[in-house]
Length: 107
Image (cartoon, rainbow, N blue to C red; front, side, top):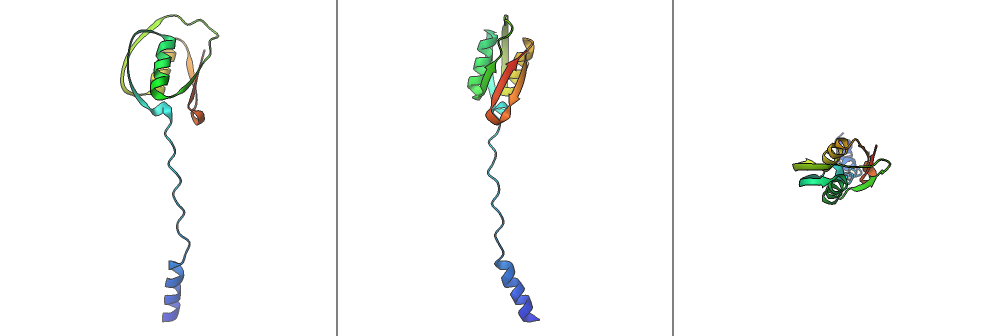
């Protein structure tokens, strides 16, 4: 009986090691927190600044004319939320393609 218990202990210590944890997924750039102050900026300027700060790729659908200005001040707000708020202000919506960090702004 003692030999069997010892054999089981040896077998247990020779078992395959636990698999390595999966590599950490890179956070979405939409979640990058940005701080931005704009005063009387055009829609394009606002989108450009958000994209530069967050390193998002932005595609702008220009099927309708964009006029107007935006003034905003945000402090450590996720870039995706800021982009969606600005787009909504001008009557646009943001289609997110998270896999490639692309924001497609369309009417």
